[in-house]
Length: 364
Image 1 (cartoon, rainbow, N blue to C red):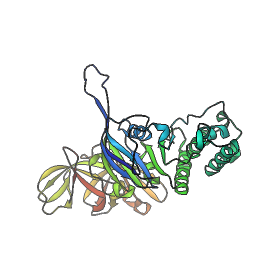
Image 2: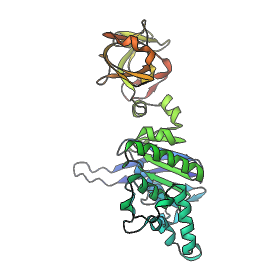
Image 3: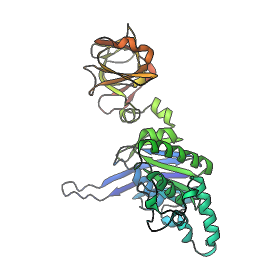
Image 4: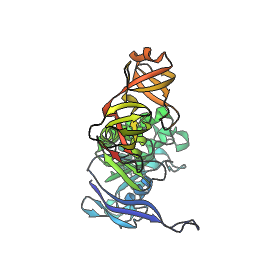
C-alpha cells in the first residue's frame, strides 16, 4: 500500500504562559512512501517522528494537510477503519491473557461479515506466531516471557489482521544490545516476507540505516533529508544530518578557505580551485583519515583503541569542535601511532564543507 503525505502539519497549543505560541510538532511534511517498503523515521527526541506515526495511525488529527492510503483519503478516517497495525515501545500486552489470546484479540473485535469463527481466529493467530517464531509460547502469559519475546507477541498481534500499513514506534528501545540486533533483523525478515508497507520510528541511526529502504531524517518537526541510508550518509545536505548519522560520529572542525585552499588551523589540507575566501565548518568521517608521513593535517596523539581488523586513533587538534578526534584506520597503520603527533591525508569523498552560520552544505 502506497502512503502519501501532503503538506502534513500538526500544531499543539502552548502550555507556557511566557510563550503563547503554538508548538509545531510536524511542519509541512510531504512524502510518498512506496508500496511494500520499510521507511525509517529518524531524529532526536522531540523531532516529531512519533507524532507523524500517530497521524498515520489516526490517533491524532492533523492541523492541516492530507494523508492518502493508495488513492483513498484517510485524513479524517478513525483508527479502527484505517487497517493499520501499531506496535508500541512498551508492548502494551494484556497481562491476564495468554500469548494466543493476545495475538487473537484484534480479530475478536470484528463484526458482521468480517467476523471469524474461533477456529479461524486460532489458525490466523498461529500463522502470525510462526511468522515471528513464538509458536511454542502460545499458552504462556506475558509475565512469563522475556522482553524480546513480548516484543514478538506485540508484532504478531499487529500482523494477525494483515494490516495495510505496519507502524513501529521505537519497538527496540526496551531491549538489550544483543537482543536489539537480533530483533531488528527479525523485523526486516518479517517485513520482506509479508510485503507490508512499514514505518519504523527510532532515534537510533544505526537501527534505521541497517534495515530501512529509505530513511527520513527529521529535526524540530521539519524533514531535513530523505533518501537511501548509504546515500544520506555519503551525501548529507546539512551539518545536522552529517552529525546525526554515523558511529563514531563525524569529526567537526572550524576551518577557512583562503587562497583557494582549505585550512584547518594552520594546515592547508585541500585545494579548492575557484572557491572564495570564507569561514566554514569542515566535517570528516572517521574513515576519512589516512595516516601518512606527508599527511596534510597534523594532530596530537592521545591514545589508540584496538578493535581487531581496525584501530581507532584518538587524537586532538585545536580547530576541532569537541573533545577528541576519532579516526578509524586499518591495523596496518599501527606504526604511525607510536609518536607524539600523527599526520593524516584526508579522503576527499569523506570530507564535507558547511556554512558556518546556517550549516547548509557547501559543494566543491
